Amino acid sequence: MRSDGISADMAGKRAAVTLLVLAGFCSLSDALRCNCTVCEKTGYECETDGACMASISHIEGQDRHVRICIAEVNLVPPGQPIYCLSADGLLNTHCCYTDYCNSVDLKIPLGIAEKQADQGWLGPVELVAVIAGPVFLLCVLLIVGVFLFQHHQRTYSHRQRLDVEDPSCDHLYLAKDKTLQDLIFDLSTSGSGSGLPLFVQRTVARTIVLQEVIGKGRFGEVWRGKWRGGDVAVKIFSSREERSWFREAEIYQTIMLRHENILGFIAADNKDNGTWTQLWLVSDYHEHGSLFDYLNRYSVTIDGMIRLALSAASGLAHLHMEILGTQGKPGIAHRDLKSKNILVKKNGTCAIADLGLAVRHESITDTIDIAPNQRVGTKRYMAPEVLDETINMQHFDSFKCADIYALGLVYWEIARRCNAGGVHEEYQLPYYDLVPSDPSIEEMRKVVCDQKLRPNVPNWWQSYEALRVMGKIMRECWYANGAARLTALRIKKTLSQLSVQEDVKM
Ligand SMILES: *[C@@H]1O[C@H](CO)[C@@H](O)[C@H](O)[C@H]1NC(C)=O
Image (cartoon, rainbow, N blue to C red; front, top):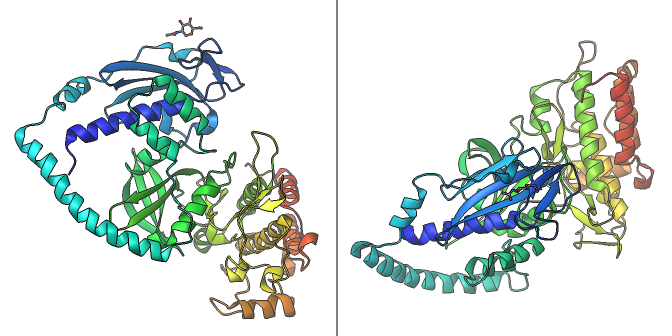
């Protein structure tokens, strides 16, 4: 029930603010040099490893030109970076890749200036609608609101407020008296980790058109959506799962998490429509779906097997690795690694997904960032020390070792589908022959801890170098003693050597 005038105004501000967010990235150290309207200190120039951007927007009756650098990590999604697209009718944006190429003067697209002029005036009918509509709505919302608020208080009285919205952004939206320079300063100091600024995330999320359900999970549904002609995946959490949504968004926005073998995160959004909250996580879309689906559908060649295994190890090694320094990242353990949580990209490599149960390690205090509860994850893939609860939860490396055990099981699933000499086996889940479907912890514990059984590594694998190496890695992932297992980095190195030996193109 908003009038066009009001929403256009809001959209205008949003677009302007979106632009200003970008202005923070001006002093990186690589080849490309660009003009920079906000870099006084460096002589209105900046350097970047990504692109130069020029844009024009129409704010409060004035044309504003902004020229900035965009770092390569922010050029997502690939091929159609969000930063480089013009926002609907409100600004014109241009990215380019040669020195000072953003020195151009852009024009506001024709027709927009007129449209904005029209929108300043409301007719009597609109005026009545503008006043009466909201008043009526306000009454209804107030009643519903009071009811929901009480309900909410009862349900979550001890819970911290989980809201993706950065409060420092809210006041930027509203403050009229702020100058351009103020806004830039505020926005550049409230950076959002490795992802897009939260405003941009929200704007993107709200312009996605959902197409079809592509999966159902523990927390809700996964959809394929369209955003400016490209596909994205949207994980929609039920409002009861706010905590999971928040946690997963938080992990994905860990500084420097981006990696080609970790699912590319695009945006998180919580859309409150008055009666319930829709919680969205937007990420890259991979049409092959999960590794589980992929292995069910296809067998793989030796090359294909090495590509899947090596890329999964690279992703996990990056996740596990702690990088020190300001451009660093904490060590992260996944805690729910399985073939259903790994996606297969078009080029036949893996992207690790579903980081909702992950834990981060703060090395300065040597603590884990959330209190890890006893046994989470999928029972079938639980490491022996998780099943019998002997895992040392004070020690972050224990969680990494449990991930490695699960990676070994995933490798077994892949290797069985490897087509060597015309022979391959049907797809099966690990322990398919030893436990029923949806096994209990007790059933798993008996097999894995008491009987110390592991998936079968067939003898004929010895006759193929690649399968022999895979079999050896698996066994070294499955030791009952977590500390004795291989590390992700070790596995990555072993498989890199194998890929060179077997002449696999990565
Ligand atoms: C862009 O930078 C170059 C080199 O410093 C300068 O000559 C040019 O005038 C700048 N363009 C604009 C529009 O500021």
